[in-house]
Amino acid sequence: MVQKPSPARDQELDFDASLAEFQELTRSAGAEIAATLIQRRARPDPATLVGQGKLEEIAGVVASVNADLVLFDHDLTPSQMRNLEAKLGTRVIDRTQLILDIFARHARTREGQLQVELAQLEYQLPRLAGRGKTMSQLGGGIGTRGPGETQLETDRRKIGLRIHHVKEQLESVRRIRRQQRQRREAVPVPVVALVGYTNAGKSTLFNALTEAGVLESSRMFATLDPKLKQLQLPSRRKILLSDTVGFIRNLPHTLVTSFRATLEEVERAEILLHVRDASSPMLEEQKIEVEKVLGELQVGDKPIVEVMNKIDLLPPDEREMWSRPGRVGVSALTGDGIDNLLQEIDEHLVIDPMMEARFRLPQSEGGILAALEGGAIVNEKRFEGNLVYLRANGPASLLNRYRRFQAEAKSR
Image (cartoon, rainbow, N blue to C red; front, side, top):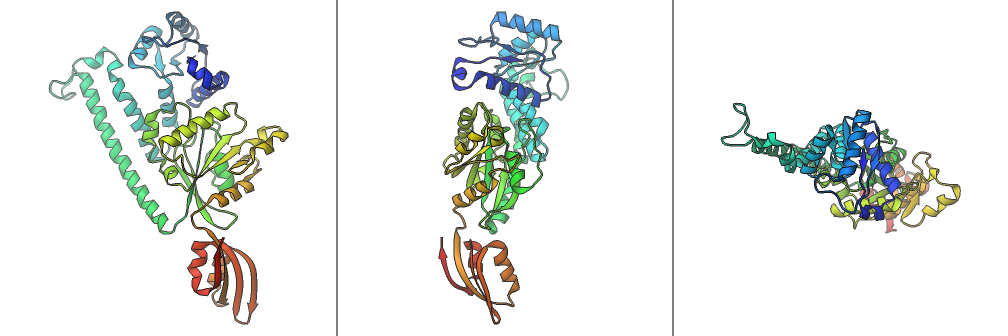
């Protein structure tokens, strides 16, 4: 594995943490790390990225450990990849290909698999010209090409047709998702979306809030397919909580584009919960990367609650410093701070405002009484003859449903 940092990246990121992240990406892809080599250069070599001396060193290490793959924490041009593979005598993969491979390993639903395939195809298409001489020669079989096409043109045409087909299938998925959303919006329940850097603990927090039992993993990008689960807040208002794919520095643009169907829940959310790993040495850098992707999705102006997760890994005297208005310190693992987080969500939720109302209804309306007690906070209740008098705080959508029994009402 080769880590090739640029001076600009050295200024932005702690190098050790950056290297550790790339190593974790490698392990998440199922690879075993045999060696790590590092080179610092003022500028990359246009032919091989690294210098000739370093390339000779890499070739020696590849031979000595019998490596069957070399990974670069850097995007490679087609010619660089071709030159490196020719010199090293083994497969070479860059950072984007590595992330795409991890996504392919973790995609479970048909939608996720389609999105990964689309990203892979869009990554391959402009790189066909750099994959060797065979691609620029005429194809040799009947029916393998169009009239007068080179093999390169045939490959481009095939990939273009496949991209078109995958996009059509994804549009079908989006159409079904829109229909499902329209049915949800008929009974409006606001969506709150979890966003954050990969491995910040979003799925663990999702489980802590909803008891959904989704996969929790220390591996990067363990969650690719969106999860939605209903959750009741302390005010008795209900929300849909959405768990989404994690972000990472230098997230390939093709992935952001291809996973737009998954990220639609982020675009439509009323509130974003930015889950951050409070114990990470790259805390601020990770925040910048997440905000960069949110900006690309044009959702940076939504209300955001910062959830400082993993406070159980911090010294006790540092845990309280993370809680302030708009920011909550929690441990999704131990449950610390979860109640405070629910309260914070309640305070930020604008849709379906809370209101207080007094009701006077016959005792025979037991269904309405049960609905009010189940969906609102009943502060007073008394019985007089056949009537029930009560005062309740709850979402306007619920209390106004029984407006005919209201004695008086006021918004909070």
